[in-house]
Length: 206
Ligand SMILES: Cc1cc2nc3c(=O)[nH]c(=O)nc-3n(C[C@H](O)[C@H](O)[C@H](O)COP(=O)(O)O)c2cc1C
Image 1 (cartoon, rainbow, N blue to C red):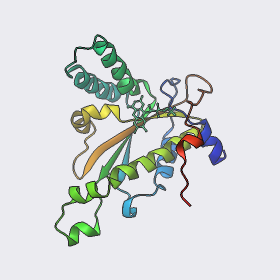
Image 2 (tube, helix red, strand yellow; image 1 turned 30 degrees about the vertical axis):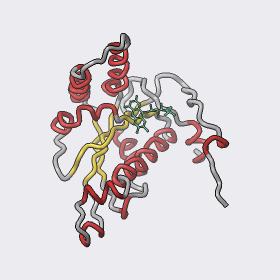
Image 3 (cartoon, helix red, strand yellow; image 1 turned 90 degrees about the vertical axis):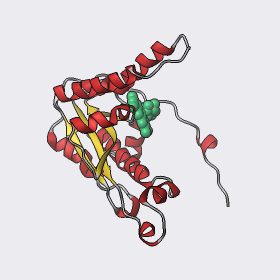
């Protein structure tokens, strides 16, 4: 598939056929993620692919518990909002596979030579660790399209970062960054969402 076609065809897919994603395809998503640019080429990432249903359910449960524990405000829609957010945060439990992306801190030359710790340098550089993770996730999403899968990037389950890290045995120096849910789309040809026109997004300074 042409790169342009994959980019234009990609959309977030959240409903899947009950069909296993073979390990070789999961590895291919990760193989392509490994080619993404990263800060200092540090490649801070690791990928944990989860197909175990009962583990996915346990993860969804801790996410639900965290969302339920959020105090609501006085809006009459607050309960509806919570249940909507809950769905977007937990639909992964019905995905044939979920890939957790974890990362370790990258090293900067600067933090070795000036009185700044890693966190300060990272903030000053506008979080290149998170930017790097974004690059590798996009590679995965486009590869998923190429292989005939639908996928969705998730950050909402991070509300339960600590209990999920415990469930997945993620320990320092690694920390959980985000997820990608993947499977064969339940519906054919989910239409891509409308996007900004080039005229609204592009500025040229000659
Ligand atoms: C950083 C990031 C986090 C996201 N987190 C979630 C999420 O937790 N749950 C979800 O259902 N979609 C999530 N999405 C998908 C967006 O909702 C989706 O990309 C957006 O609505 C545009 O739709 P499209 O991907 O079909 O173009 C996330 C996307 C990004 C880039």
